[in-house]
Image: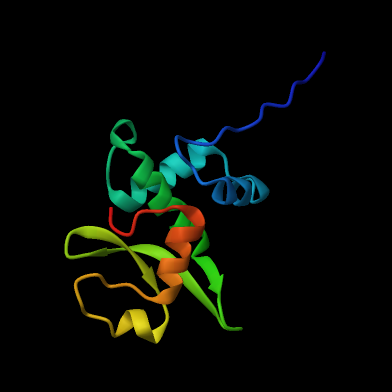
Length: 117
């Protein structure tokens, strides 16, 4: 009997860096789908590509290191929307409308992610 390895595929518009991370962590698309469903509280058939992004960043708290200190980036529910958040003090104490910091901006540019979902 011959066994064939089945490779997982990226979801629509999945950033290559996140796809590579997901594959290196051996997280298949069906596991990501289930995680996304739990986080955003939607049935599997109603998930969008943005829901998958939320789940990926939730799984890894994407690290950003700009000046020798590492910060974690993920989507956080804020005023009914999912926004890209950071655990740096600039983001935590920024209560303006855009709610960004240099780490979230760098992540948006690097991975081509939306700031608000």
